[in-house]
Length: 115
Image (cartoon, rainbow, N blue to C red; front, side, top):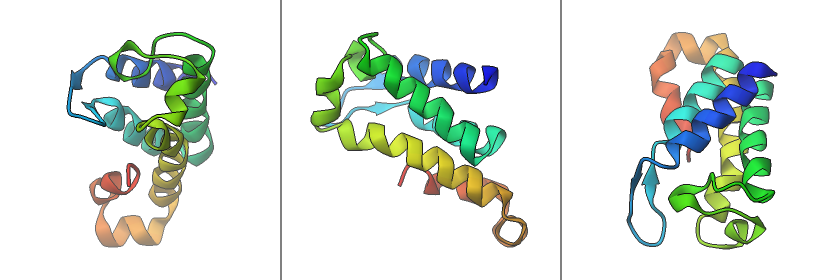
């Protein structure tokens, strides 16, 4: 649980390293998304991203550009933010599959999480 909280905080910190492109900025959050899934596994990785979302929803400015609140989930970045939970779970599940890891290599799996 502590690791899930730490990766949630890392995702929040990654939101402040931003390349402002309209309508969706590029941030360092996807790095923490991949690391959370790969290092924590599917369940704890998804939990870490869920913690990040809940912290932002309750009002702390942890989303890209210092935004916060439930309204961010209804904007152009909302689908990406909700997809962070699914993405961390997918990466964690794929890393744990030995057949896929042996065939492709673990580093090949990271781009699939943000998709």
